[in-house]
Image (cartoon, rainbow, N blue to C red):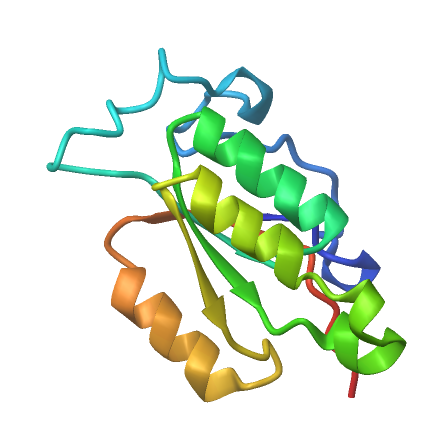
Amino acid sequence: MLVGAGPGYLPSAPRRLTGPRPGVPLATLDRRVRPDPQTPSHVALAIVTGSGGLIGSEAVKGLVARGFTVIGLENDMRAEFFGPEASTARNTQALVEQFDEFRSIDVDIRDRDAVERIFREHRSTLELVVRRGAALP
């Protein structure tokens, strides 16, 4: 499931977003309907692009609270475009320190090979993608 995609990604007909289990509305996901995060048999994984930004970091917090393991794809282009004071590095570091269930990968989402490698590596547990990172040409 892809959540948070830009207008070019919207399906032609509205559809109800559901959680990792068919028929479970996304808004109702919590630890009661998720597998126990400590159970080694299956840990639900979410990938969040732009995980160091304002919305991406809040998505990470919400997903971890609902029992997901989260991989953030972040390359901190804000620092390059707007200077060091706009860097997302502090947010990313805070998330890494706060949540054992979160790890950040420094990758540019325009690097198709790198992104495909990450998705292939985690395809067996990947259940959700939240796209909050901007991809500028």
